[in-house]
Image (cartoon, rainbow, N blue to C red; front, side, top):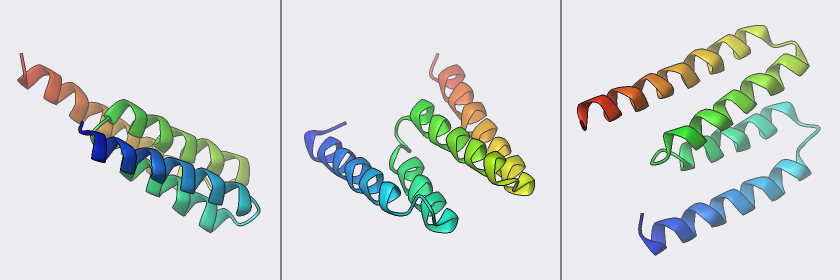
Length: 90
């Protein structure tokens, strides 16, 4: 990862985290911000998986179980792709 990419990633995290605090009472905006963070970690699948699992936990607290299942499956797909990439690189 280059310095430019790292700087962009850090800025995205800081901005989204700040906005998440502002919108903690707005579930749709809050989850959109979490998703933008998850997308910013496409080059680091483990961190992306962590954010996706965080989104699932957030939906559990709100009783949105269909959303929970979606984000759990999505995070497992990310994990599977990570394992496939590791296997293919050997």
